[in-house]
Image (tube, rainbow, N blue to C red; front, side):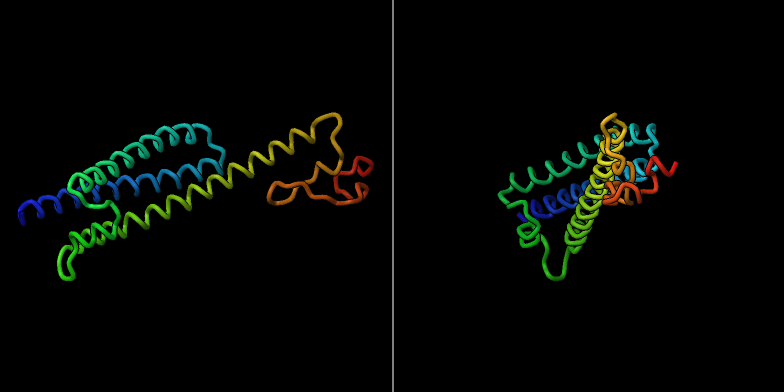
Length: 167
């Protein structure tokens, strides 16, 4: 029974290492994606998108393998349950370290993904406003934008720096 427990622990460590490697690579990919989106580098955006999808698939596979392993042995797949099963106060802190790393990387990936979403939303809003300002029925004050890409409402179109009579 002790031998089975050691083998299970070793397998779990290997699976967690794989998850950490995948999560770290995904985080780097997300950072690259944000940089590419910021610089509007279409080629890099396209390449990174395909790479990111492969990394997400690899991370999901690694997570599924870990969950399947612990479920197969009747252990709940939560970090707390695994810690109770395998990590004693004086041994195998590697599992604990790996769970901490995986948790931190997951938070970093979520934060980076949120930043990417905000960047895309700002760009989409800017493009939408730019297109609407180009329509024949556009109001002159729709031609002035703030730092966030939102329309600056000057109230008085005569005070707008782009008021047609000033040009």
